Image 1 (cartoon, rainbow, N blue to C red):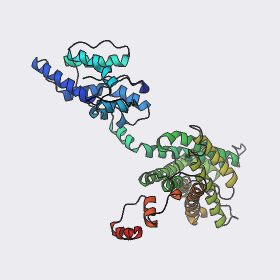
Image 2 (image 1 turned 180 degrees about the vertical axis):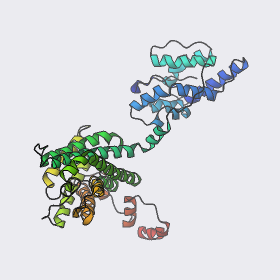
Image 3 (image 1 turned 90 degrees about the horizontal axis):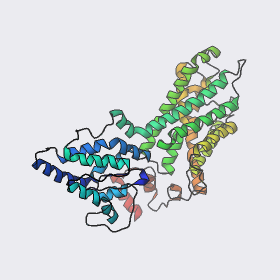
Image 4 (image 1 turned 120 degrees about the vertical axis):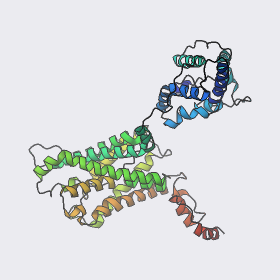
Length: 443
């Protein structure tokens, strides 16, 4: 039986149920073989129908934000009722012996009768229905040509698997490049007759750059764009550690590439204004003021990062006045600008380890040998450990005082002991050697 499903919700007019279609094709092929009109198997015909409708059908599904695997190809093994449910039509009506609802069967009875009666199907009103019904009638004449079922090339398949990592890399790289370019523009023009802004200009450039980066990759990867944020989300919101490692690697690589690209664009101006490569190093990375102690500088990083992580958690908390759709990027961009304006004087407010470490490596590679490049421990104490500690502290404060969801370990009971709680927090596998100890703890 040929099943026609009207799924206007997805702008998809026609779906062919796979198992009933196989029954049709088997009967038709047997009949045509008996008349010596065709020897083509039903499997090949199924592949041909599949290929002919692949592009249009997958485009409709992609418009709903579904991945490739949720589009046409996997449907070939689904039952009619599963196809009915997958297209967003839910029903509590009873099913018949074939697993279909009554209206599902009634909608296809006319078309099924026409096929078995060897008569052309009635002319439909909708153009997509007409296309499919025309091909169903063409089955009788053996007009199909064998074709591959997956038209995607190798790169499309690779991108499908690594799309989140690519989005995180692109969003972070573009944001760091734009922010760093804004800072270099201001720094290089300070001694020139024409000034291209002040410190406030640099702060706004970082804010707008971060906002654009979130819009660029937020719909795919979530646009963490910060190793401290990714690690904090793994600890307090269940973000998978395997994906966290990929995100962190993509973010650091993006910072390195962004620093190299910024230097490539400003190399002539850098060597013209600072031929000794000494005075503009602070434009590439965070550098504490000479009179600021190491403890104060690290505390500056901790406080700024804690505020950032609290803001990120609050924007994702549905119980705490979440912003309208698409506004999170704008709010976070304003927050970056605000933090740099208010907490940037002492150390430059490096809120992101990736945006500090990558350009720092590039500056060292091109000849900046300032004491604060890698000559002291500041490069990992402040922008690295200080920022990470601040992000974790901000999550603890927010979850301890405001958040009420059970995703956070702050709100979970430690009824199974500290060891099991820590293992669940970090998603670690069980150690069989310690199984007896855990049983003793439970006892």
